[in-house]
Image (cartoon, rainbow, N blue to C red; front, side, top):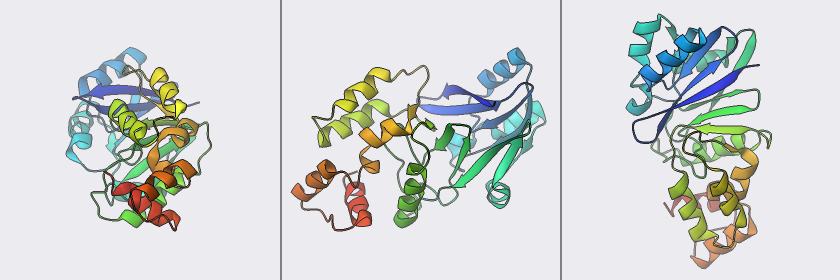
Length: 233
């Protein structure tokens, strides 16, 4: 079974090591020294290095890790073509999730999703690509994953995200539970919890629809409700 180790770097970025018994892969490896120390302690050999997208805060460690480990760097085009990566005989599925950027990818294995800046814990990324419809379809695709999926995101925006969620749904008790389970030492959530608290996943929820209606925003279709939610940013 493949496992995951999370590393915080800068103020709120996360890097990840996916690993088995002897081999590992690195995603968004900005925490270079922490990752190298972990690899040394666990006697793991890095087989690949890759990124969820090409923003500089996610690629900042790629070159240094390549130079220090000799591992192959898988670029987005390669991953989009092959749809997956194999590590110790187990598949890591590569999901194309355009929206935040045109090249955004997520990595899914076992019950774990590395979601980059597409889906955060409690919110979503900005639509820097301008492809709002594509972003909507990407989010809907992630929402279709099993409810027990563990979401490991590219940044820790939990407190700000829950403040915004509470401004829309002050009586949503699931927000209190979400914050109770939050720890800055290891930040993740279940998809089930996201569906209960993340406003951008609740475009079909009657309470969110009511909020949008009161603001005079369009609610006649799923996509129009999504557009209305995005306009609140």
